[in-house]
Every structure is written in structure tokens, then in C-alpha cells.
Image 1 (tube, one colour):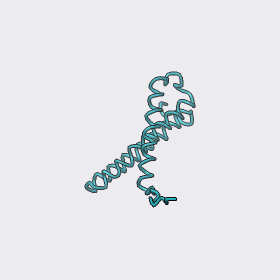
Image 2 (cartoon, helix red, strand yellow; image 1 turned 30 degrees about the horizontal axis):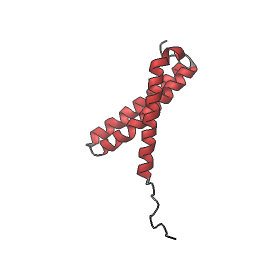
Image 3 (cartoon, helix red, strand yellow; image 1 turned 90 degrees about the horizontal axis):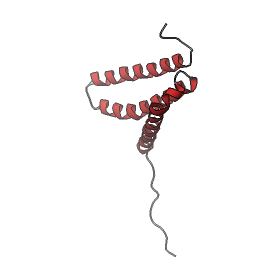
Length: 108
């Protein structure tokens, strides 16, 4: 009986993170496409706001990690711009959700 001398492949943390980023990119794309097609049905509803937030957060994760890796190799000013843009995007997601479910009214 022959033994199998191959070692098991181990996933590194970086590989797991890349897989997660790819999953978020996929989910973000699917949710965004769904909202483009059926967005009118959910317009102004709590479900529509939640789906929109999920799509935005999935796309955020999909672009934030590669953008961070890119900015790490750049001048300090670009890293600061990255963090400012990230905070603005997250604040926009939160404010969009709060206004979408009627917690706050930005238009008033």
C-alpha cells in the first residue's frame, strides 16, 4: 500500500483575506445589479435601504483592502487621503441607512 507523501495545503491569512475580498466584490456586484434592475420596487422602503447598505458595504470591503495596500506604498499624503475617503464613505453609508429607514431626515 503506497502512502501519500503530499503535504496538505495551508491557507495563509493573506489568502483568506483575499478570498473574503473577492466574496465581498461578488456580493456587492450582485446586490448592486439587483438594485439597478429592481430598485424602483424597493424605493423608499426599509428593505430597499438595507439592501442598498449591504451592497455599499460589500463594495467598500472589496475596494478598501486593495486601495489600502496600494496607498501603503505611496507617500504619506496618499495614505491620509485614503483614510479620509474611507471615513467619508462609511459616514455616507451610515447616514444613507439612517435617512432611508426614517431615523433622520437629511432633506429637511
